[in-house]
Every structure is written in structure tokens, then in C-alpha cells.
Length: 234
Ligand SMILES: [Zn+2]
Image 1: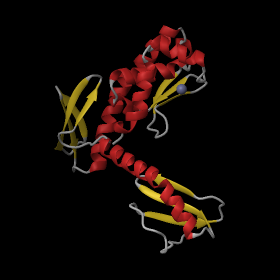
Image 2 (image 1 turned 90 degrees about the horizontal axis):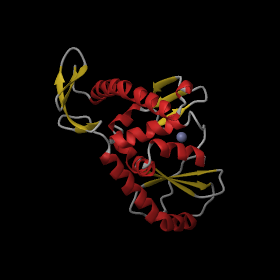
Image 3 (image 1 turned 45 degrees about the horizontal axis):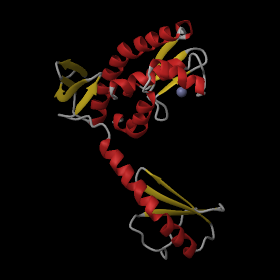
């Protein structure tokens, strides 16, 4: 049941109000949109004072989300990416055969028409190819170092929003290949992390000690991913 209450006070941010059979007031801020959920008969006064109280938090969330959006990867002429320590400048060209070609420090994306989704596809396909050449090799290398190479079954790729990597019980390791755009120590940390799960399928102290064997500065790189992971997404 959606209803916009016009008597509500004006705040420095627009929001929608949804009344429903709930008992509490709550605010969600997602993708720059503020969404207030209230009980059916919540008074305007209650909602206003709740919004006033939460307003600094809402503004912080909105500013943070705006910043993160600006920091996202832009696939366009002249954009720069780093791949395994090398900076590449993107160039867009038209061609009947969509593909990506790297020459020196230039990566040319050939597309039939320069539309964003087409550019992204060509770019992501190319990046996946780079990931295939690097990540399984590193996972094998780390698995050998830990003496668990017999447990590593396969390395596959999946673009999931929630996780950078995943290790299954059966020895399958999955990576989000956008990680290839992270600084190399961060990329290697994530590979070391998933490979360490071949030894411990949890996040126990023993697990983190194993990660530290492969990657002594892992905390720094884990932090980097938390604060900068959004930059790797187009
Ligand atoms: Zn883990």
C-alpha cells in the first residue's frame, strides 16, 4: 500500500513513504533513493521526527553512494585501466567483427556501433580471457605451496555482485574476473584466500594463518577490496 503523505515535513532529500502492516519505522537508502517504510497509522509527527533524527545518516549514505557511482569503471575512449601492473588506455573503433586488441599500452575495443552494452561485452570478454590465463595458474601455484593441489578440481568464472570468489567443498574455485582490474597484490590475495579454503572451508583463525602464509599483508588488501571493490565494476 503506497501513499505519499503531503503533510510531511520537507527534508533536503526526496524520499518515498510506504505504509504497510509493519510495526516499526525504517529507512532504506539504495542507489541514491531514500525509501521510508512505516506502519499503516504512523503519525506524521513520528515520521518527521524519525526522519529528522536520521537525516545526517541519510545524507552521508547519499553522498557515499554518489561518490561510489562516480568512481566506477567507465568503459569509454581514453579511459585507463590497470592490468597486472600495466596501465592500458582504452580506444574505441568500429568494425563488423567485435573484438578487443591490445597493442602496447593501448587496448582497442572494436564494436559495430559504440553503444555502452556492446563496449562492455567486448571489454568483459577480453578481461575474462586475461583472467583465464592468470587466475587458474596462480591458484595452482598457491595450492602447491600449501600442499593441497590434489584438492583443487577446477577454477571457473562468474560475475557475482556479492562475492569476489568462492570455494566449494568439492574443490571448485570460482572467481569474479573483474578482480583482474584490482592492483596485483589485491588480486593475488583473493586467489590466496580462495585457495586457502582448500585447507579450511571456514574463516577460522587457522584459515587466516594459512592465508598469511601465502600473503603476509593480506589485511591491507582485504581492506582495499572493502573500500575500493566498487571501482572495478562498470
Ligand atoms: Zn572466504
